[in-house]
Image (tube, rainbow, N blue to C red):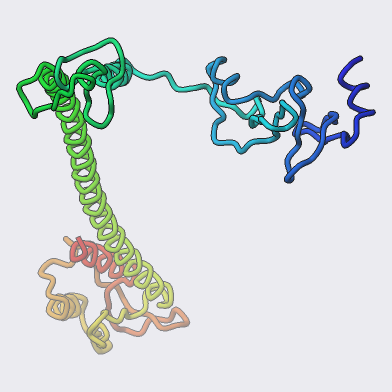
Length: 300
């Protein structure tokens, strides 16, 4: 009779919900599923069974309980899907375990033996039966243990030296990274400052040019031009003044020795209706162009 059929008719057996949604005959005790020996569902194993397959429970809690001998003996069951691969010890770890086990077979009086010694006085059976009292140092057992300890200390010193070198290399790499970041940050800030200053100068020149162009556009062509910053107007002559006299007055006002060399020329002035006034002034367009060049030189 199969486990399914036989389990349905036994007293106290019920269908238990498994971790993967399956249902299996068993019972619940203490909040955990419980199965009889040989009737556990596939996918559950004891720690010994997992260890034989090179697995460990991986920190999981027991999922169920396996009982036998009329519930007098039991073992915990773990889910195989949640198990992890058991870590493989290194050669040094295996050597340390072997030395620890071998130290249990060293008599404090006669040295290595083929069986474990007593843990109280570290004497073998024969030495204990003979009533030997172990002494500190000088015996074969203590010399063997001391040699093993010295060997372990040499291995530990080599490991510590390697660890210290690795830590020093990591600290040096961290310091180099920080120094590089500081240099890059300083270079970036310098470049950013220079770019901001250049942009500020460009905006200032642009604003001055725009303001001068706006002022020039508000003035009528061939009208008397007001000199920026002085609050004065270009001096004109009374009607009938000769062009030479008017040019001399304009040269004295603007400090220009040669008006023609700067692109400026004296022209007859006219009113807003285009009628001659009999006065002489500098051409407005030429004068504004000359001011633009002058301010451009000052800005640069």
